[in-house]
Amino acid sequence: MAISPRGYLGRLRLGDGRVNWAAAVDPDFVRSHAGILDALRRIWQVSDLDPDELPDEGWKGTPRLTRCRPVQEGSAFSVGDAAGFVEPITGEGMSWAIATGVAAAPCVIDYLRSASMTNWTNAYRRLMMTRRLRCALVAKALRWPKVMSAALRLAQMNPTIGHSMVGLLISDRPGHYA
Ligand SMILES: Cc1cc2nc3c(=O)[nH]c(=O)nc-3n(C[C@H](O)[C@H](O)[C@H](O)COP(=O)(O)OP(=O)(O)OC[C@H]3O[C@@H](n4cnc5c(N)ncnc54)[C@H](O)[C@@H]3O)c2cc1C
Image (cartoon, rainbow, N blue to C red):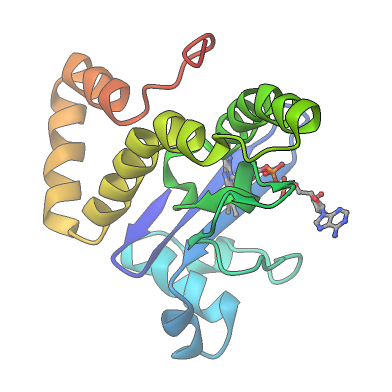
């Protein structure tokens, strides 16, 4: 993974040998380059990696990632990314989508039975507030290269500390939402 104050880009080899690339980048940073590929090559390059490694084609965009919206509007209940998204850096989006889907189910049933306003907004806040805040803090820390490199150096020097740091930043484990 290559990290810069304006975005991050990662590469992963899948079990079947295919290589998967993904990035989250500040739109202004992309606009100030000749295109998405040029912007991503720059991020790769500032991490002393070879920009020619990036594939020329196959990049797909998403709507703006960071967003926040009311999670219940009348009979519409939002879960997962539709309820709001911080940044993909902690890799929790899928577990959040599943967790909020599971947690919304009883609220939807209540709503269908009583047709009255349910407390999905409060339930969502209780479930997600700390998680979203933690993710936002991690995303903020990325904008401080000195903080990041000190943390990475510490993790490299002492893998036990590194493991504990990751545990603090991403505390979602199976059964954690029960
Ligand atoms: C670059 C990047 C890297 C990421 N890395 C990770 C990671 O490592 N780990 C992780 O857990 N998460 C990661 N995420 C986040 C994760 O992909 C999402 O948080 C997760 O997929 C959210 O699930 P969802 O079901 O809420 O939304 P989605 O997966 O977006 O599903 C919504 C579905 O609804 C469909 N849809 C939209 N509108 C309509 C409509 N009007 N009618 C019918 N269907 C519609 C869409 O086509 C889509 O299939 C990453 C995201 C990005 C952008």
